[in-house]
Image 1: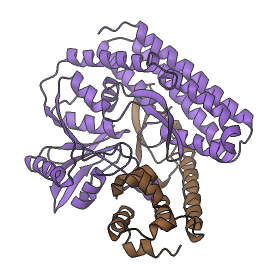
Image 2: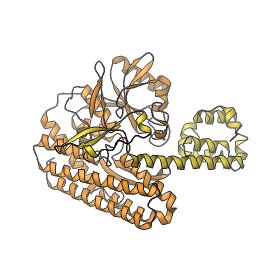
Image 3: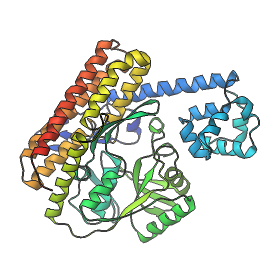
Image 4: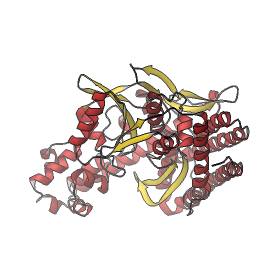
Length: 132
Length: 343
């Protein structure tokens, strides 16, 4: 990539920093240059977020319909999967999956609820009283 | 690589990739002024390609354009005879105490962190990715001074914020991983040349001779084969997301552009000067070409996830582009292999 071809198309990252890229200068030698971003990768990130938001919305509906427990919704909201969530709570994945069942969720101990709430950065009452 | 923001002794170095950056900045701090990001990347045999079978990350294919996390620092230091201390912790309190001790001694240290809770990152970038690296180089007013190599400037984190990202959970959980060069001797040009040769030879081995069909240059063809099937198998929507994931792994911050291929081209250019060998300059051009081809494929993939390209023939064309890239990279590594640069 030639230096003059380096895209300068701001994205989410440009709020924080420009990024170093390796480009060829006029003499055909490599040097570094700073880029504000590139629409090709910005669009890739945007489409990933569209997908994430759809998953969250589906999870919300599933909880409202009584198919899943609020734990499932907050897991999606925090971009986690079963493995990551189990890492934060210290539970086995088998139990995490069980806790997605509303029937199991309603009997969870205060200790378990506290673990989940802290993994999600919310209060126990926000977890228990899901409003959608 | 930009070296400008300075502190008393430690100099912040902005690099394309975080682990290269930590390696470069820490070695420079210990007096190795010749160290640059491309050199660290090349000596550490950083270039790679793999599509890890059966694994999905963030609901997409698990593809990497670089070697495994931690390898670049480890290999580069070993090549230069630099002794390294690295520690992991099960207990956050012990991890904090160890870090505080180092800060008190005035030693800058590398830390592996997760980005999901990394407060200074923009929200859009905060996925559960646990192989980010930064340097803690001091403390002030109860905050740790942080040099994050992908950023233009230095920043800071509170104790709680830092401990939280050092104990992020999920794949590649950092477990408080902390590392730094322990003792650095004077290094001769000859040692550097040996390190370069070793780095190149190991990279040739990884890209050409790794067993299996999903890693090395053959891994690129493996992904091309998948791409041909994605539209029918997953449906257009999911197939588009998968292509988007490839582009992010390839072009996002940390890669230097073109899936680290430009960075490797820059390394070979530096290597040519150290080795007094113009043949390496020619191969550097091959990697520039490969990087340009990766970027061209990204533009084509963007056509799909922007909804402009929807036909099976578009997926076939993208796959064909990847097959062509494989050939360019294969020939480039075969040239490097034939040079017989020594051991």
